[in-house]
Length: 447
Image 1: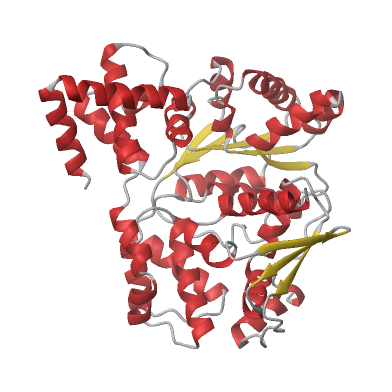
Image 2 (image 1 turned 45 degrees about the vertical axis):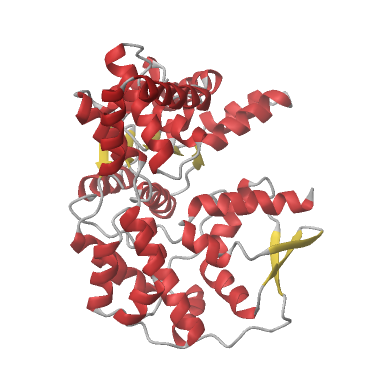
């Protein structure tokens, strides 16, 4: 049972970080035992322990709470028995920030779900996110008086969660005593299920319908969950009618969220909808520079340009590449140079340049068949939609590393529908030479 809790913590940490960071720092850990409220976890050496404590303490605290163990403490034990090393000057500066009056102090009790690193001051504004940032700032400065609800959407790792936390931090620090809750839609659903199970639904409703500000991340995961949608509908109404602020985030606009009740879709459109796009080159360089400055690491312009040019996916992967580079330089005692960046990040950048995303395939197939990408996510059984959807699912299976459930979620379908679509396309390829030629051409375009 105890080992299971660490697996749950790791699963939540993995969802918050890019793959390379997780594999470098968290995958080598091993659960040893549980002593009261302390989880004893083994790491390879003292250096890894120091790095985890300095850079990921807040993420681990969040993950432990989300795994159902708020208040539990993690104790890292070095496998080699080492005591770690003295912190470098830049690391020492990071450790001293807790005593720096320029650094915001701890948040009031009850807001532990907010990440202290995600503030408006640490958010880099560019053309791709300027509108969403301005809207978030306006809401933070005048909750329920500017835009209600505020609905922000954009791809993974582009800054939606950062802005959500920034709103929460600002409200708590500047708006006097407030009841504020930040939660993911998945956690909202899980808490509702437990409330029903243990006959505490009244307490659940009291908790969420009496806050001043409600921040719900990844609202798209309510899709297809009828009971949860119904509960959230009444929660939304109670808060809105009471003049309380609601902020939502999603990976797509309300009209593109599949299997979402129309009454919720309508309410999500009541306020302001702001999108966040992929950052341009200049914004990516600024993000890298700001991240490096915050960590006290000198980053040459040519190194920042190299990383920003090569990493095209999202900000999370961009920062993850920088963390990987800085960690390698710190552990080996080398300077952060262009040559080192090219060597350390060659596998990361190689996979980045080869990567094909579900969104890219969806848009490609939609354009090929002359339909809108959003149509492929609908419940339509029209032949003009079904065939492109099946082809898109087939291409996703063969050109991405996404699992069948992941592909299904991207289209708002169950993974059994994905399996049926793949088999149907394979069958049609065997029977129809022209169709087979079309699919072969599509596959070759992405290989």
